[in-house]
Image (tube, rainbow, N blue to C red; front, side):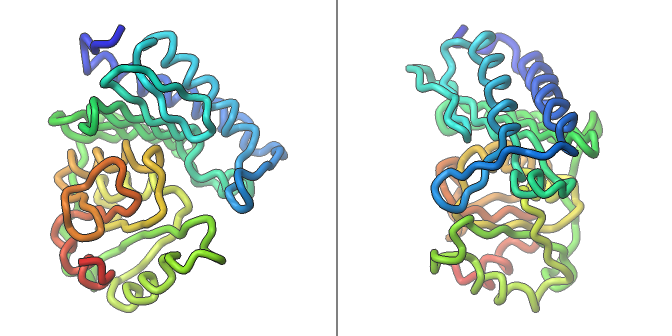
Amino acid sequence: MDAIPDLAATTEWTILLARQAGALIRENFSESHREMYKGTVELVTEMDTASEQMIVAEIREHFPEHAIEAEEGFGKEEPSGYRWFVDPLDGTHNYAHNYPHFAVSLALYKGTEPLLGVVYDPLMDESFWATDGGGAFLNGRRLQVSTRAPLVDSLVSTGFPYDKATNPDNNVAEFSQVTPHVSGIRRSGSAALDLCYVAAGRQEAHWEMGLKTWDIAAGCLLVIEAGGKVTGPGGEPWDVRNKRVVASNGRVHDELLQLLGWL
């Protein structure tokens, strides 16, 4: 089934799938975990793998012609314009340390255009979702970005690449530059939830570099559909393949870009 006959029905199905994967990782949250590494610094647990295998199997069954890009490599390439971006456990380091902040993130795109995005926080039981042109929601309540400005009165978030100890392009200089000019700054360990929090008006902006598409494909759509702004580092329209992203309520966007020195 290459075409999507009903975007609303597919969104509901995706929400349920994210909740199913979230239940799996929640049930095993307090257990000790088998930790492995991709490369030298990027952590993965057995629950990343189990969650992804379940998600990919369901997508293959329901949409066999769709391509899948999944973090742990269980996806597939297919000659289809539709593509799923799957992060089965965003916030793996948090999860491995029993730090209660992580999520499942799923997004469906047609080419480079987003169709739907779902992010589920299983510990808070918060389902964030958005559809192209259909708005953004949290557990059925419509979301709207905050109206707070300027940046000095704003709460913002960011993240750092896994190889920050050896990579000079590690966001440390940007973090130091921005910190004195905001009300507060957070580093939660889950880019997907950071973006959802911008969409929900819980914070005014998020910036990050060194990202993978599955980290933010859903969250960026949520910000846009909640009335916010998402761009690349130079203020150009955001592209799903861009590894740097700036997302905000729109009111503090240019000020943040100028502080980052990315314009």
